[in-house]
Length: 249
Ligand code: BTN
Image (cartoon, rainbow, N blue to C red):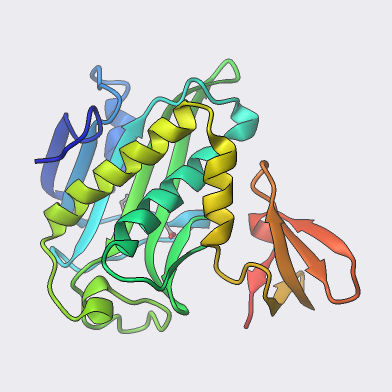
């Protein structure tokens, strides 16, 4: 049983869906769903990733679920606050297993240099006010091989044991609710501090690529807009949004 006030209290479970995000986004207009409603699928036929990519996951070995939030207290300009909150919640949950997990900007979860979880948040906004946010989480749980995905890793590969997928989801609902309540209470600065202190490559010098230009510098901040702020080795400070920069090495 999930020890939460509202996340996961109303839940749906399907063997197969095209995408848990799509299902939840459609259902918002079909039925009245309370904040915290979750939907989990054993298999997604059209799982979606960030920036128009897909998300493929091995049946029953990975966790693919979505949560409905209603962050009407947030300004649209602060939509990235929710990404911070969700990434940290996943980090909190995984960090209980062992240290070594990081949040890779904007909201991937990495173990060392490999991705273990990804987040896709889709917003429904009306008259410039936040209405609904569908928070989709894909977490590699028990997979042992990723074929073409060289930079993917699962909890089983990290910790060495199988995990019950739905128990992991229950714990994630709890850590998500705790971080979301922190956001709702206006404690964004505390969230931001925790985000930066667990951020992959924070304050370390690395290479990045931006519009075919190879850059060397260190991440010094993540702005409220969600932009990544990098200080280049010549001292110049530049801000990048998600489509403008790639991590190299
Ligand atoms: C990414 O890192 O590219 C984001 C991946 C998000 C995948 C999850 S799986 C559950 C939910 N439903 C989807 O179609 N996508 C998200």
